[in-house]
Length: 308
Image 1 (cartoon, rainbow, N blue to C red):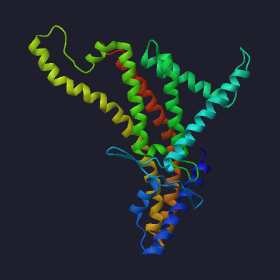
Image 2: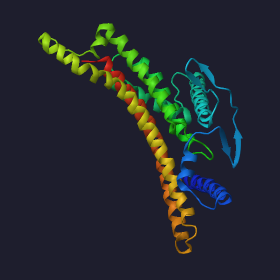
Image 3: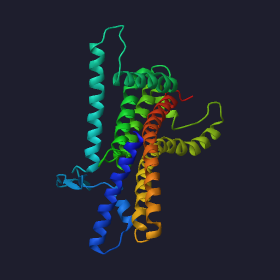
Image 4: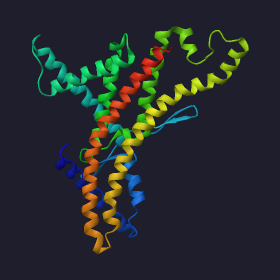
């Protein structure tokens, strides 16, 4: 994203804030920045495009025993599906480029960029952290990276939204990573070896000492398995939510100081410049957080496959 693109994104966010301020003026004449912020970063049953709200279909909840499931699509679901479609298009189009290439021919353009990223992840992230037999995990780690990256970047396009700013989305991704980590460990260590990753008792210790170690370390090891996906989910959610809140908070200062003629233009210029800089920073954060999520998943897989 260029400086011009970041500036246009800040202008678009300013337009959104202008609409919120106009709605507040029509209702009670007060502009509530906190309420507006929560409304813009939370999920919704509609997609806002150019000031027009496209309402999504709402279905009756499904009751399964005491559990109520609402499968109605929301704004985050729409952009999550869009990110999935972009992932499919990326790999299908790049795959077709490689199918048409000769054996000694090198790709160019976007296919060359994707190939460089694939090789980087395979050699530096997957093989370096998982070790022997790591290549079979490369498709999953790469899919995680590109899927999260597209969700992050969709929040920077006009009228877009980052599905990763929803804890339910990042929680589902972390749960999927947790399943891959534990299944990989179970297959590599076997039932008895996997059990020792939870029920820890050092060999050669007196039976009484082993009993004490089991009593102390078993809850610690079990909690350690749960804290890994929890950390993955919270880290990604917090970083993607904080950036959007900060941008809207800075631009909201324009309307907070709207009645102060002396400070109005200075605050407006400074807020737009800072929001533009943060938007550029969010491009880097989008790549960084996708990389960290994928890399930590590979690290956790390697740790459990080599439990010693």
